[in-house]
Length: 265
Image (cartoon, rainbow, N blue to C red; front, top):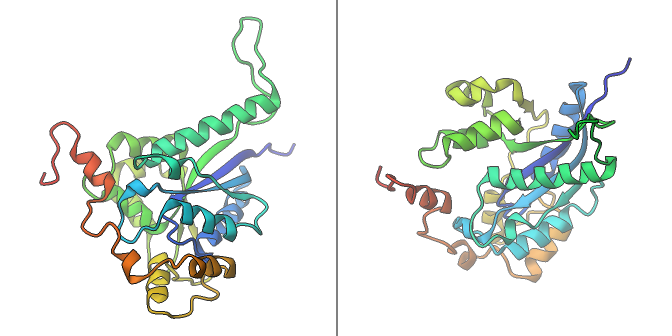
């Protein structure tokens, strides 16, 4: 009897400043890997750009990052861009964004299958497996869990334990070391899927922005439609790179406001 696979949605959070071919490549690699486990059927992917409140230097306005992501993903029939996180007035913790999307996905699932209750009024098993949401990230993301005051312990627990991670590594990065270094990640290692990029691609958004500032070509690093948009709106100049300069990243500033916390702790 064939095993009924669990429907899975992949969520990627980040600046996407700008979105690159490598960002999109992560989704393809993750989908192939999760299908190869025999347990999951990837049914969708979500790109969720961070809000302007993040405060990162050189971060262009969310309206531009959203527009570029939509242009880049026009050719995808399963990955979409969601604006909810980018529209929040303040920076949103990753776990909060995951809760939002998980709630939305489960609501759509219940509406599509119908709500079934047994004779006691309790929900009964539905005909198809309940979909899951996992966070898709690059290998360097796991290292952020070790940055002091960047993550709350219970948020790491929820992301790794309740939801799960799919981490795509490239180059000389070794995500398994980050998992081993963290008690929380090690405890939930069964829910952390490590994927190796088999084609070397070291492209980063930082390098793309640097090339654009210097008037160099970024063709084949980002989609032509995104390049055209950047030129049309005069993005990624020396002036734009100074945006938010000297600003404390909102996650660190927010953590510092917690009782008993300060940036000097």
